[in-house]
Structure formats: structure tokens, C-alpha cells
Image (cartoon, rainbow, N blue to C red; front, side):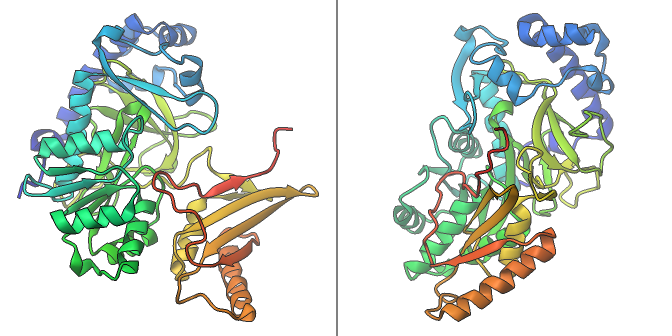
Length: 435
């Protein structure tokens, strides 16, 4: 079985990778400066010229780009190639303001699909596999990215998109799907539906899943692995940098290898912008060094994680990033305490509850309220009010231990929280903080 999609790159020495990155960065900065007036103005304001960038060691001299810049420059302001060279757009589902639209040349798509092929190969995929892609297609990058990567590897590709879960399971059984690609919340729902239809993991041939597009915990990973009888791999990406495949997990499952020949990562202090050393928690920043149409330099992802160069047993030398620990813009400050949804999810799964929950934050009489609705399984459900109240009290205590603040917990009946077939909505913040 092929262990790597591109061993020369994935196992490249540190010195050779730095040399390759430096060459590509110098070329890319020149390309952007000459073709993107918006970014050229940012560089001019900072007093930086392309001549100041001689290697990756000079990366810190360049200005940052943020989502606000992408909205300001919408739709064509960050385009670095003529429209006649572009063959596709993808777009984020953006919850605020204008959507982010990213552009691709055919070369950009080839490189992106190559990155996804690396992820599928790292999860054990070969041309003998049947790859069922249940990420959304269309403007969302999940479906098109993994679909293209699966074709490159030579898998039989089932372009299912999300939804119609019983049909997903029928195809999975009839066609013998071996690799599943979707969001972790949808994978959990497929596992639940499989069980409800009277099947067990023995009734399907799945061996691996490639799950991304939303945060998920180690506890949720173990729960999905058990319900589907698979090994669950993480994949990471952003529409702004191409889509899934920026980084991917190997069999070690201790973080995702970043495709450093295309994306240079940095970790910065989210408040000061100062570059932090490897091993420190901070905000992840990416520079695209091979993208032609929409090359973002020093793009602030808002994802908080840690970079590590620790030797990996899989043999890849590509730097690793941890699962995002939350987002610097998703972090909720409730009664002065920093709260991430992932912390709450960890407690729920440790206490034996499903990862179907909804967090509602509000402000009543100048005081923050934290309400968490959690779905019970059929086994946990009880007609006795006192039983449910006792369980709510116990769970609220466990969450208070984790967060340091008391929530109000509402245990709700099985299947009463709306399932998501795309990215799950976990938090509703009703506070009118900007009044």
C-alpha cells in the first residue's frame, strides 16, 4: 500500500523545504505586489518592497490580511490573475457581512486536489477504495476538494453530498464504501442512523473517515470510531487558502501535517501580532506560496492552535498543527471567563451524552446567562422528572468544574435538536454587546 502520495515532498529535509519555501515566497510576493493593488498599498503603508523579502526569514516583515480585508476587497480586489485565466470560484458560508469569494486557475485546482490526495493516501486510501463524499458540493469547498482528491488517488468516488441519510447508508452498503468524507457532526449522525436502521459496523465496509470543516474533540472522535467501526482522520482547510487539504492527519493521529510546500504557517499573538515560537498556543496565520488567482499572504485564520516539529512515526517531515482549540473570534467571554464550545463538548461526551447540543448565551439584568440544551439517548431518557433533574444537576456540576462558571443545563428528548448535514450550529449568542 502506498504510504505517501508524494514522498519527495512529504518526507523532504528541513533545509530543502526551507529553500523551496523561500524560492516560492520571493516569487509570490513579487506576483502579488505587481498584480494586487490592495495588497501593494498595505505593503507600501508598511514600507516593505518585494526586494525586502529574500527568504522565509523575512516573512514577518509583510503585512497581515484578515477577513475584514477580504470583505473590503470583495469581489475582485484581491484577484492576482486576469478573469480569463480563472476557471472557478468557491465561497464561504460566512455568517456576517459579505461572503468571501475565492478564485482558482486550473493550476490552483490541480494543486488543491493534490493536497486532498495526500490526505486520502495518509488515511490508507488507494485506487482499490470506494470513497463516499458527503460534504456539501456547490460553493462549499468540502465536496469539490475531496471529490478531486479521490479521483487523483483513483478511488471509485461516490459524490453523494450531504443529506438523505438512509440513502447514504444504502449506497454505503450496496457499493461497499471504504472511506467516508464529511463533517464530524454528520458522521456522528450517520452512525446514529445506522444503529436506528438495525445495522452495526459489521454491516458496512468502512475502514476510515476524513472529517473536517468544524471543530471536534478527541471524545467525539472516539465516539464516531466506535459507532462506524473506523479510524477517524482530521483534515483542515479554509476557502481563503483553497479548501480542505491545507493539512491532514496521518495514522499517528497526533496533529495534522501542513502541506508546507504550498502553505507557510506561523503562530502569532492574536492581540499584538508578534510571531510566537513553535510549541506556543496562538493564532494560526497562513501564506499561500503557490496559488495563482487568489494568493493570500499572512492571512489570519483566527484559529488557535500549536505548531510542532516533533518527529512523526509516519516518516513525514511536514510540520504539524494541533486540532484548532477554538477560534480567537469564537471564544465567548461569559461573566469574565473565556469559554470555548469544545470545552463543553468534552464534558458532555465524558459524561456519556451525545455531541448533539446547543449553547445559548444571553444577558439578563446586566448578567450573562449560559443555557445548554443536551440531547439524551433513548437509554438515558426517563419519564420521571426527578431522574432528569438529578442528571441535569450532575452535568451542570461537571461543566462548572471545567469552566469555572455555572450553566443551566436542559436535558431534552432524543432527536429533538436539529441535525446538521453541513456545519453544525452549536452556539447562539443573544447578547446585544454592541448596542
